[in-house]
Length: 112
View (cartoon, one colour):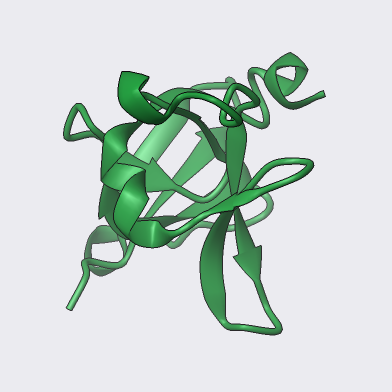
């Protein structure tokens, strides 16, 4: 079972990382913005992948066709996280070969 963790921006603009079991007080819209859930998966560098992260495929053997960055989104119809760009998606077992290069809040230009 994965740990239920979140990252969110506090009022001064810093990212805060918390476990659901350690939240006191809880994350609230008054104190935090852009609340993003941990997917339970890690990138190539061992960093936790959260909803809203932007990833780059980092496998030189299979780079062709994967130059456009991917973003992690929640798919409510399928009840799962997905890694997508404008023309493709990446299966979850491949995320461990990708690297986090930013997030949709601080680096929107990466996915425009």
